[in-house]
Length: 144
Image (cartoon, rainbow, N blue to C red; front, side, top):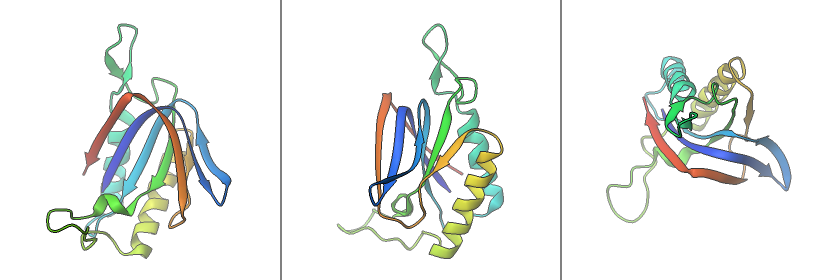
C-alpha cells in the first residue's frame, strides 16, 4: 500500500464541479492499493501517516505529526501510484489491486482514519479535480 502525503495549508477535491472533500491545514493522502495489500497493511500505513513528523515545532524543525499540529486528512484514491514505470513509455498497472479490492481497502483506510482524526475523502473511481496549496513544499512517499 502506498501513501503519497503532502503537507498542505488547504486541499479540496471536486467531482462534477461539486466539492466532495475539503480540509484546511493537514495532509493530502494520495492512496494507492496494490495486489498484496490487506487491512493489516492499511492499518500500518495509517499509523505511519498519522505519526509521521512533517509539521514544524516552535523551533522550525519537523517534529510534529498531523495530530499534534491540529491538522486533518484528505484521503484520495490514486490507482496510478501502483503503476510499474520501469519498462517502455506506457505505465503497466499489473501490480495494482482489482478495482473492487482497491475500493474495499480505500474505504477501510478512510473509515479507520475517521475514527482517529478529522478526515475528508474523495470519491473512489471518479474523475476528480484535486486542488491544494502544498506547504513547503513537503511531500513524502510512504509504502508498507
